[in-house]
Image (cartoon, rainbow, N blue to C red; front, top):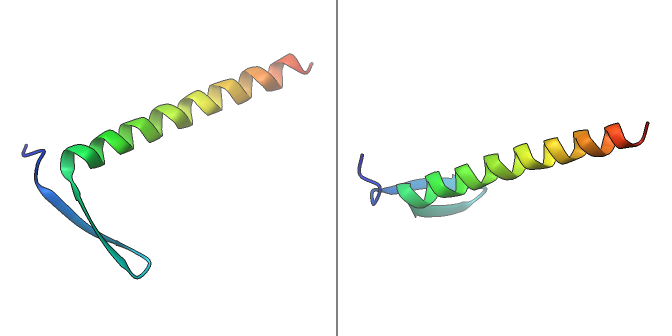
Length: 49
């Protein structure tokens, strides 16, 4: 897999370019933060009982 391959995508009316490696890193960080937030929210909800 070529991690330096440029990925083109469009958000709204803006064109974006990003290397595949950076895109995968951003996706991994996003998933880790989502799972961490869900876990902390669950723990906070349990502590209210």
